[in-house]
Length: 398
Image (cartoon, rainbow, N blue to C red; front, side, top):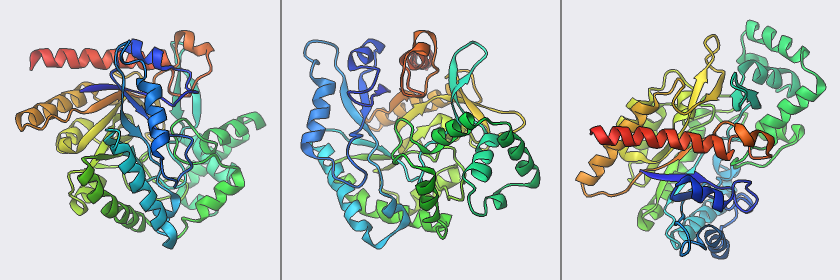
């Protein structure tokens, strides 16, 4: 497996020089300044690649190998009549990346919001900080801050009562912070930051969009993109919806093994693959990650390796735990990935799986530094070291 590290560009507090010291060999990155729906220009890709690789002749090499992500325009997700221009632009961006040898693309098809957390600095017993999703806080936001139309239909009477208690206990600063955490944008999001009013407007666009319609729109998009990806030798790796369930009245369609079965049955192209995000899939107790890694091994082009610990009494709530100490069987997942790579070698397919440590804790010196939530350096380095140890141990006995 190829060890990768996510880098957000020149403004990332974790520098390319820092990343070299982690021992990672590959960079996961994107052109975050290009507006959604526009073509990624050759000059922009070249400049970004140069920032990453310019010192490779003097120091240990880092290669921009994985894109995370080319945003998919909302008009494509909504299936609007004018979406063809955005599909065409996505394909051109893919073609331009291929010219520079960048041939693994992670993307998602989440409506309106990208990955979502309620707490960006949840304190752990050891004094460090993690990301957290609190279902009761989220319900309080949905019902009493956003005041989404018909939101009460999505909650039981007991859940509404508890959400009201949580809401009434919040200060104005806490309400503003919760709102900002959910709608104002997080690192790596592929959506714009919203105000509360335009967030409501964006949600309203989906009032008549069911799961079946959204899935149809995804399949339509991929039916146009995948043939070109095959020609270019590009592997597309869809990221699961995070958290992997319906929320805010929005349908979610990449949440479970059953969702993936529908995707690959409809579009069996070898270019059609997944990002195995262990933490996202693992935040649902009905997802068996080692089994999914075995079942869809040939479709896994990229893996986000992190763990989550779900609340015992509310399984929809979780915090991002240590990479090896969580409800996710990380050793089982890595074992399945290593076996998949062995199969590939035996069949003379030498496509290694790109992996990266995902969402590290904010610990030690990073606690006092300003950084991207979930993307502190030391926490991710700790996760990478743990993952590296599991790979080494498993490789020595197989």
